[in-house]
Length: 91
Image 1 (tube, rainbow, N blue to C red):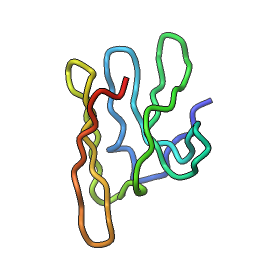
Image 2: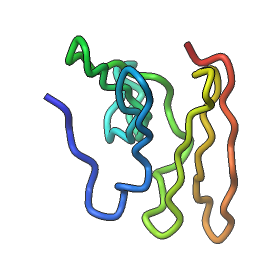
Image 3: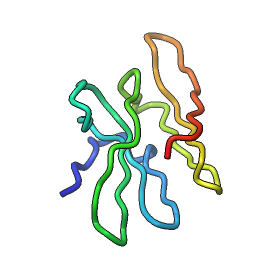
């Protein structure tokens, strides 16, 4: 079953051809902290993709996947600064 992100994090969902990338409060590596997971709509299986350095900010949502599926762009907060991070070759 997919854990649904809290209110305010809907802007962090990215729909692609095979499924949905979304923020997850847990990670499969056991390191704790937030991560991005992928729900495959064909298999109904959820897979961990990568850990986030910080919890996503509800006031500045943003998650996008490149058309070729090789990069993810997301916003992440750090005290009073907001950074944009690009993750490449995550599959």
